[in-house]
Length: 331
Ligand code: 8YV
Image 1 (cartoon, protein in one colour):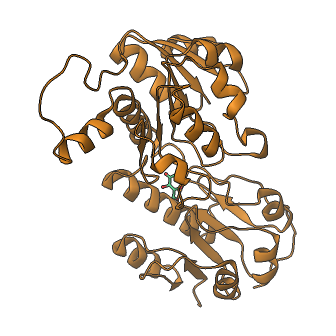
Image 2 (cartoon, rainbow, N blue to C red):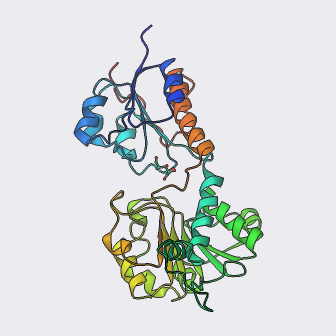
């Protein structure tokens, strides 16, 4: 029996590629070349399935060029690289990797918050540059985490993980804003109080963004929202580029309209707005919130398991859509 053909669009753990080879004819990318849309379409033309990361866009053009494609397994919880409606209409299953990265990503959100509020990157650069010649009373004095008010925008699994860390570990008062309110039981567990977005921005000492990227979450934080925040506040984005208006944040940081920001994701990444690169009061990391070895392995394993389960007729494990039944796919 011939095996289904899949594309593994980016370099991943070699042993997981080998595991996939037991089930599929694998076209992989060990050089980790970023495929252009045209290259991706050419490589997908004869494929039944694909293993992607956030860097491959799956849209109507790609689907038209890949008539055999039946499933795309994203190694990420976010899947804004998918045009879900186009995939659903074309009968193509999409999957993501929820749950396995929740705690690791919440750890990182908290680490970035602490590094930002306590000015760790800025002070480390100062030390490395040989500028530390004496102690002084206000040297890199930042703002407190413990006992402060943590405002979380986006209270899904990762947001809840950050809330628990803040409330239980650091005695923070947690307020949150979300499309829908959590159940009373979850609010109690996270010790979190629901508030409107404007109230959150005005009240929080630290604002952490954990919303999925959609057209309606585009520029959740722009100049108007930054103007509502306290001048002593910090802003942390571990969600997606485009949730924050990077230029507006660069200006607010330069003019000290907010104290500091910690950003793991950027508009147009891996490009970073030059205005962010030359202000001191920002901690910049290259989209690594889920990057621990066990978690990246768990994400890759889950994406692989989705492909295997789907082609064994067991159904996708973590689907993001319900493809239109009977939408014709070749092969
Ligand atoms: C991924 C992420 O590493 O899961 C997500 O949504 O942002 C990260 O964990 C990244 O998207 C690459 O696939």
